[in-house]
Amino acid sequence: MRDRVFVRRLSSWCRRSLIGLAALSLLAFSGCESTRPALPPGKPGLNVVVRAGPSTWFTLPNGTTSGFDHDLLTRFARERGVPLNVTFADGAAPLLDQVAHGEAQLGAGGLLQAASGFRLSMKRRKIRPS
Image (cartoon, rainbow, N blue to C red):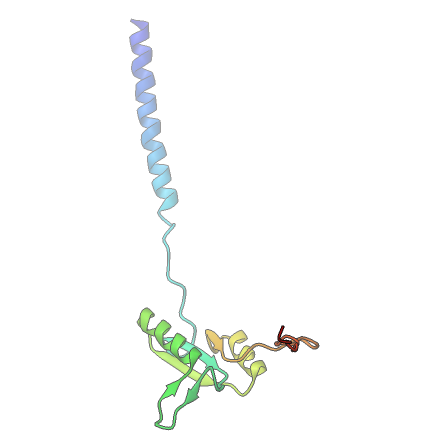
Protein backbone atom coordinates (compact mmCIF):
# COMPACT_ATOMS: atom_id res chain seq x y z
CA MET A 1 0.00 0.00 0.00
CA ARG A 2 2.78 2.38 0.90
CA ASP A 3 4.52 1.62 -2.40
CA ARG A 4 1.43 2.60 -4.40
CA VAL A 5 1.16 5.94 -2.63
CA PHE A 6 4.87 6.59 -3.19
CA VAL A 7 4.61 5.75 -6.90
CA ARG A 8 1.57 8.03 -7.31
CA ARG A 9 3.32 10.92 -5.61
CA LEU A 10 6.47 10.37 -7.64
CA SER A 11 4.59 10.25 -10.95
CA SER A 12 2.60 13.36 -9.98
CA TRP A 13 5.83 15.16 -9.05
CA CYS A 14 7.48 14.11 -12.35
CA ARG A 15 4.45 15.29 -14.33
CA ARG A 16 4.44 18.69 -12.59
CA SER A 17 8.20 19.04 -13.05
CA LEU A 18 7.94 18.21 -16.74
CA ILE A 19 5.13 20.74 -17.23
CA GLY A 20 7.10 23.35 -15.27
CA LEU A 21 10.25 22.68 -17.31
CA ALA A 22 8.30 23.00 -20.56
CA ALA A 23 6.76 26.29 -19.41
CA LEU A 24 10.16 27.61 -18.31
CA SER A 25 11.82 26.70 -21.60
CA LEU A 26 8.94 28.25 -23.57
CA LEU A 27 9.33 31.44 -21.57
CA ALA A 28 13.13 31.43 -22.00
CA PHE A 29 13.09 30.87 -25.76
CA SER A 30 10.16 33.15 -26.57
CA GLY A 31 12.52 36.13 -26.90
CA CYS A 32 14.84 34.36 -29.33
CA GLU A 33 13.44 35.66 -32.58
CA SER A 34 15.62 36.35 -35.56
CA THR A 35 15.25 39.96 -36.61
CA ARG A 36 16.42 41.45 -39.88
CA PRO A 37 19.38 43.78 -39.56
CA ALA A 38 18.63 47.44 -40.03
CA LEU A 39 19.12 48.72 -43.55
CA PRO A 40 22.08 51.04 -43.99
CA PRO A 41 21.24 54.69 -44.56
CA GLY A 42 21.06 55.81 -48.16
CA LYS A 43 19.32 54.50 -51.22
CA PRO A 44 17.45 51.20 -50.96
CA GLY A 45 19.10 48.37 -52.83
CA LEU A 46 22.71 47.41 -53.40
CA ASN A 47 25.02 50.43 -53.09
CA VAL A 48 28.34 49.87 -54.87
CA VAL A 49 31.39 52.06 -55.42
CA VAL A 50 33.28 51.18 -58.61
CA ARG A 51 36.69 52.21 -59.86
CA ALA A 52 36.11 52.13 -63.60
CA GLY A 53 38.72 50.51 -65.81
CA PRO A 54 39.11 48.94 -69.25
CA SER A 55 38.36 45.43 -68.04
CA THR A 56 36.14 46.05 -65.02
CA TRP A 57 33.55 48.71 -65.92
CA PHE A 58 33.46 50.74 -69.11
CA THR A 59 30.97 52.41 -71.42
CA LEU A 60 30.70 51.27 -75.03
CA PRO A 61 30.29 53.75 -77.90
CA ASN A 62 26.57 52.98 -78.09
CA GLY A 63 26.13 54.06 -74.43
CA THR A 64 25.75 50.64 -72.78
CA THR A 65 28.03 49.66 -69.93
CA SER A 66 30.02 46.46 -69.87
CA GLY A 67 32.91 44.77 -68.10
CA PHE A 68 33.60 41.92 -65.72
CA ASP A 69 32.58 43.76 -62.53
CA HIS A 70 29.54 45.22 -64.29
CA ASP A 71 28.32 41.78 -65.27
CA LEU A 72 28.93 40.30 -61.78
CA LEU A 73 27.23 43.16 -59.95
CA THR A 74 24.18 43.34 -62.21
CA ARG A 75 23.67 39.59 -61.98
CA PHE A 76 24.11 39.63 -58.19
CA ALA A 77 21.58 42.45 -57.79
CA ARG A 78 19.14 40.75 -60.17
CA GLU A 79 19.35 37.45 -58.25
CA ARG A 80 18.77 39.28 -54.97
CA GLY A 81 15.86 41.22 -56.46
CA VAL A 82 17.23 44.63 -55.46
CA PRO A 83 18.12 47.68 -57.53
CA LEU A 84 21.80 48.38 -58.21
CA ASN A 85 23.03 51.87 -57.25
CA VAL A 86 26.52 52.59 -58.62
CA THR A 87 28.82 55.50 -57.80
CA PHE A 88 32.30 55.90 -59.24
CA ALA A 89 35.56 56.58 -57.41
CA ASP A 90 38.73 58.14 -58.82
CA GLY A 91 41.09 55.75 -57.04
CA ALA A 92 41.40 52.89 -54.60
CA ALA A 93 41.73 55.08 -51.48
CA PRO A 94 38.44 56.99 -52.00
CA LEU A 95 36.71 53.72 -52.88
CA LEU A 96 37.86 52.05 -49.67
CA ASP A 97 36.97 55.16 -47.63
CA GLN A 98 33.41 55.14 -48.92
CA VAL A 99 33.00 51.47 -48.04
CA ALA A 100 34.60 51.98 -44.61
CA HIS A 101 32.27 54.90 -43.79
CA GLY A 102 29.17 52.91 -44.75
CA GLU A 103 28.34 54.93 -47.85
CA ALA A 104 28.46 51.73 -49.92
CA GLN A 105 28.11 48.03 -49.22
CA LEU A 106 30.59 46.86 -51.86
CA GLY A 107 33.64 48.22 -53.61
CA ALA A 108 34.94 46.86 -56.90
CA GLY A 109 37.31 47.57 -59.73
CA GLY A 110 41.07 47.34 -60.02
CA LEU A 111 42.00 47.12 -56.36
CA LEU A 112 45.09 44.96 -56.93
CA GLN A 113 48.39 46.68 -56.31
CA ALA A 114 51.54 44.76 -57.06
CA ALA A 115 54.15 44.77 -54.32
CA SER A 116 57.49 46.38 -55.09
CA GLY A 117 59.81 43.99 -56.83
CA PHE A 118 56.96 41.67 -57.78
CA ARG A 119 56.65 40.81 -61.44
CA LEU A 120 53.51 39.48 -63.01
CA SER A 121 55.38 37.81 -65.85
CA MET A 122 58.03 35.12 -66.02
CA LYS A 123 61.54 35.57 -67.37
CA ARG A 124 61.83 35.12 -71.07
CA ARG A 125 64.04 32.30 -72.19
CA LYS A 126 65.27 31.57 -75.61
CA ILE A 127 64.23 28.21 -76.90
CA ARG A 128 66.78 26.59 -79.12
CA PRO A 129 65.66 24.04 -81.64
CA SER A 130 67.24 20.66 -81.12
